[in-house]
Amino acid sequence: MTYTVVFTPEAEEQLAAIYRYIATAASPVIAERYTGAIVEFCEGLVMFPERGAIHDDIRQGLRVTNYKKRSVIAYAIDGDRVSIIGVFYGGQDYEAALQFELDS
Image (cartoon, rainbow, N blue to C red; front, side, top):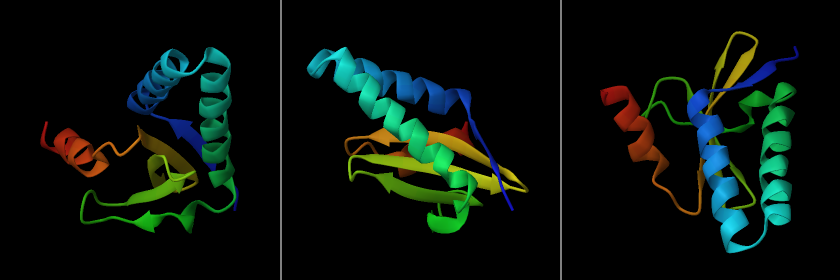
């Protein structure tokens, strides 16, 4: 089965924030390369979306995987759709952020 990967507006904003951070700290070229690689990594979930660790304790159906030990990608699988819920960089507390979204 092949899946479709979609990014939530929150995940898109998080990617934009990561881009801005890296562009300021390093350069726009490095920021584009890094965020583009994250998007490509996420799009790779079309073949094997179950590879992430299940975290039902945080949110029902949540899966989490890492990109280069610096970014955490949170996503959920619903039918043939993989929804990227969040992209967290540099040790951000993704558990608290995702729990906060549920409480709001």
